[in-house]
Image (cartoon, rainbow, N blue to C red; front, side, top):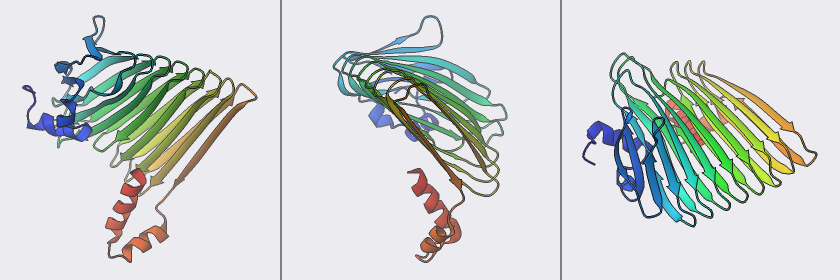
Length: 308
């Protein structure tokens, strides 16, 4: 990778793995431009002609290939916008690793807005991993606003893992799904905020086909003066199943707001929403402190275990 320096490599390793990237199809975007790409026999990547971004085409029956599409920003003052569309062929089964790392050493804000759309044909399966990370000593903010839109044809499924590691000052995360018959959309989200960081998550899933199902799990930790908001909207339009869980730990003056909305438009729609927000349990701290940990170390151990 000729255009990758040490800072770039560190960012890539935080959101992905440089060595793993080389093994399959990939597209690396840096400071608003594509800098390196590799395709395979079953995965093609093309640059969009009408807007910034790429189209990714996976052939039907493709099995267990990896596709990496990381974004890194190392210049202060950049506002990047990208549109990436994934077309997953019938009965394909692939793993897609995305995410963005921002290194900001200066006073201007750096921002990345990534809009990812997934179109899965019948029987297709995708595991989608998305990580966000920020670093740097500059006063400029590190802003990430990911949008994920999923359309599932009958019998297809998508599993999404979304992680905000640290260092992101502001984020609005939007995820939308339209599910046809016998589909499954699983989302696992993990977010930690500190300082004056703010994070908002919005889920909106339409269960349109019979036996469609979704399971959304959000685990978050808000410490110091950070603020988080979790909004979920589930529409059961036929015989279907949905389970949404929002679990959060708050510490110091951190705040978390959970806003559930579930709408059953069919008598056979089975929709569940659960939310739990609270501080670290005292008995958990005491148990770990009896093992020799300080109170701070015990808190960190509990938080890390909660977000695993």
